[in-house]
Image 1 (tube, rainbow, N blue to C red):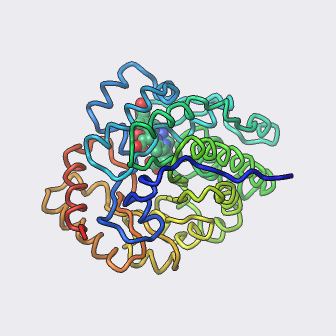
Image 2 (cartoon, rainbow, N blue to C red):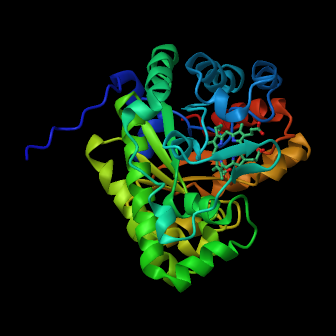
Length: 354
Ligand code: CP3
């Protein structure tokens, strides 16, 4: 059949932003900055509007999502907004019985561990997440020339929550399934790839000007296991959204040994945690991709002098890079002083002004 040409509504002003230029490895007026988990967490204005509203419910209220997404943009002058949601939202939307417990994370009532359980993972349709389309429409109008990053959890990280039934340090049930029943594992990841791709398409068609795939916990795997058991599913996700021309960012924690493969999976930008300096990360990723990162989020608890010195280290390692987006090496920690983030944005902008 005739495939419609994918279209987006990204404006020329957004396309010309420092963030999107850096994603495309074009010259920039200053190094763009945003922070993973910049919305929510540390901001008092966030805690105020969230009062009494459970996390997952807040993700389904377009006005609230719009307000929370805009809060860090107003306060910190970051170069991009990230849509306020959570990686488990599409799973909730297809009827998986899960909740986000404060201070704990996503908890799944009945973990997915058998072939029969796979039937609970039905396809995601745009109607299942109509609130996302609505909120993104409101957001892109409010944001003007500021890009809006959409996101999703990658198949491995989603599978970990589904199979474990909640957060896990060692991923023992997940790995038991991956090694013990490779066919069921492959089918599970393929289902999750389709759901994730559908969720990202909704966001791009609603106005997201970049997307980030969070494979937060995939650093638990060796390169050989990643390539064999995870990469095909993540590749399927990136391939599904390749036609839009919207930059695709791929991030995981503790992925020093996987950086090349994270790029190979189909990313335009590879996110790097603080354990590998960006010049070394560039060698591991290879040419043709921008890098995002990578200040240790814990550094923000130190003195301003120390923050500036550690930021200088990141910027020095990024000197020769072909495309750099400044970020933390993982999400903003919940008790971070918001003013430290504001000062950091200002510092990076000033130091890198061309
Ligand atoms: O600016 C933003 O990044 C906000 C949007 C956002 C949330 N979760 C909101 C949230 C994003 C991008 C996420 C991604 C996410 N969620 C990831 C990938 C990023 C990462 O940190 O590696 C993961 C692994 C999750 C799963 C998740 N959700 C965890 C582990 C937790 C509990 C930890 C915590 O901070 O309490 C959540 C809950 C969650 N997601 C909250 C928020 C604001 C806290 C909500 C609450 O406790 O009421």
